[in-house]
Length: 355
Image (cartoon, rainbow, N blue to C red):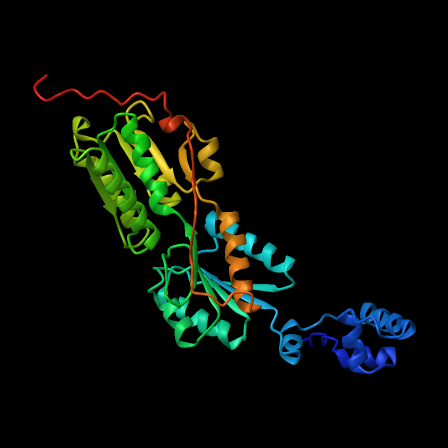
């Protein structure tokens, strides 16, 4: 059976022949050059419409030695946070006259390095990398090895080679410690699905160091995992299985959106009431946290601000408007207080042993 041939894409030379002008004239019309005679410009536009011609942005940029393509590599395109980040980056790129191509590393450092190299093959003008691990991971190493123009976003701190843009994870988590200890909590569980991410480690440090500074006797338990998706679920199950009600924490601070979902599900499965039996605060807000009952107090990351700042920083480097030393940009987060741990919430009373 003969395979059906796909229609050939029209080229700039097809447009030129149809309009009766040179390919150079077509290029000028498409670029908005005003010196082309009106009748020639009209014929070119008519030919473009009839042939359904579309410019090849990569070929065009290579011919003009002006690459208008930005690459973005993020760990996960299914995550609401990274989805919102990519949307913000795309909007900012298009306003500046650039095209954005996006790829997901799928939380794999090996794939991350491969994708960065692929961006280099595409000869992108610059790359925005949200690393799997941190500024010391495989992707950032590849950027340096290939001497690429880039900005590192999220899960990073300061870097000697590249500008970095991230949420102020440390201060935001310290603020959660202020909030929970201010309510009287002295036994808090910190839960995270991974400790590979620099952001998770920074949140852990921010909360723990502030809590200990406020009260050296505070008990902070941690449950972290770097294994497959089932292990963090089993870990939180085991944590509550091994503790009698009197030994349970009075509050949980979950260090990511996925962690908050796992914790909330486990508490509900065990019949542990929020906030009556245990308070819950999550890092990274989501729509479901606002609509569930009780609604969940959450740290909202400034994702749109991060996207705008990251793109502006990269474009300033690309276009030669900034040749100074790399800068670490920290964007402030906001804590949204809801029913799961509001100021009116009382710390659950625990019976003392022997009563």
